[in-house]
Image 1 (cartoon, rainbow, N blue to C red):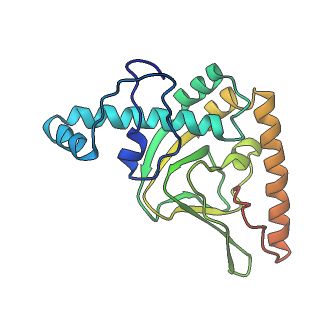
Image 2: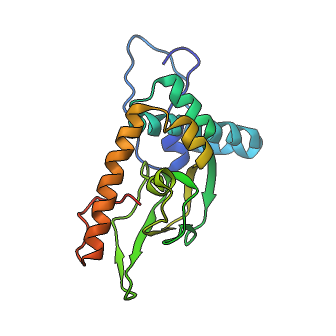
Amino acid sequence: MGEGDFFGEMALLSKSPQLASVVAAERTVVLELTRALVARLIQRDASVGRVLRSFHQERLLANVLRGNKLFSSLTPKQREAVAQAFQLQTQPAGQTLLAQGQQGEALYLLLRGRCRVTHRHPDGKESQYPLLREGDVFGELSVMLGLPATATVRTDSPCTLLRLDREAFEKHILVQPGVREALSRLSTERLQRTALLVSGQEPLEGDSRV
């Protein structure tokens, strides 16, 4: 970071622990705004809050795309193009995002919150999977292969998500060999998990692709 950059807004706005450390690389002069002072500034001028939230979302998206194994092979320019194609959504708790048996029309990337994943067996019994958490991707198998979703995904808390529709997925994701290979591996794992479910076995902890 250089002169004019600011940091710390992610933990301030989300009220969560810092995700990274910032160390001065040389003698540095900084201006510090406490949480209380920022709150007063936003009360005085709502545009301050809007700018901070917008910057927070952009930085969060950049961090997620850079750190997620599906997108890590993309160049910075390619990640920027994908970021612009994503649609930001906020959903309340209890909202169904994917319904088992229905074809998915988008890939989702969870920025904030938790989602619950369930699979309903023919006899009506439901299997629960590990919760989807920040940074998780879902819906990729249905979009890539055109298959109905094999599980239902509902928000377990208020969530902020990024949605990439099928057209943008094909334009920005499937044309990238590294991402396509990673998705193929995930698809294989996903189909293996489905086979375990059909046979009455539970999936391994941590396998939460749908």
